[in-house]
Length: 449
Image (cartoon, rainbow, N blue to C red; front, side, top):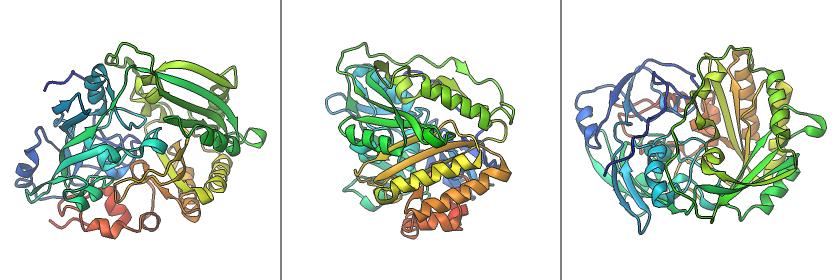
């Protein structure tokens, strides 16, 4: 089955989206879902399957190893318009799936803040979206997939077939084998439009009140100002929406035309410029509450319209920090971390605050759990960024939370093993050839090849 021609967005050389760290690695492209067993006969080093490289740190890197690039495995295998079940190779991107499915009246059941990630990467990181409180993680909607191991063995994984490998692979960071294809349960839509509502709030109590009031709305997320203090502490904009029932022309999205043209100078993002941005962003709504019909592109993927937007952080790159803190400590933990960030003077304008629901993930190592999650982006300033991240990670641990490996480049082994005590059980399912710089950093576990 042929696909629309969707240009893949990614950096010219393989690197994580945060552009840190940078390691030498050989890239071996996979072009067909049967390539991996043949490749293993020719390589004798450790390897890691990777997609678009949109993880922020080193979960998609392998120092001095081989990266098995899956983006050539992008064929659509089957689609049933009666059930909405779509089967595709693991290297297809969510952008390509949307270009195919939206004109047929279907949408992704869960989507992150970028559509330029692969199906396999979405499974391996068990991504979440604005509808976690009602739909859970991406893995909740994967009915089955094929996993190929480095010894050439192949297995079909589902909740009832090889369920242990199904659970280990969802959120397993690509370490259990190569996912060759997967079946995804799509959801029906009649419009590209979102019934959108934006609401200004001041403080975490107002955010929590809005969260409670919107529990029956499918999509909710908040931008929060992390630079303001005093009466403006933790002010933000609560954004919510549902797929519109107003019938609209279902067509593929236009290709993005804007490109961030160069690496911004290191001084461009500072506390003053980000504080000014935050003030403008908060007040762009003239009224406290705004209701509108909005296309799904700016609602779900506001940054995708600017290719290579990560260049705005300069050549040194950016660090992202994302935690979830369970409800019993969510309010006090979030307030404490926001105060620590404001006190640091480091600039973060992409601050996203959201509540996770109680829909359990099928993944053994999945990140989300019920509570509050906060994601922050910072330009890398080694003398400030890494000490701050160490403090924030320790605070997250004290409040009973954990960090998201797909966003991490600084977590210590002690922190990771406290956040994910099940890691040793998971290690039993790791393919002996596969590893990553992240995995070696946080566990010291080396491949056995």
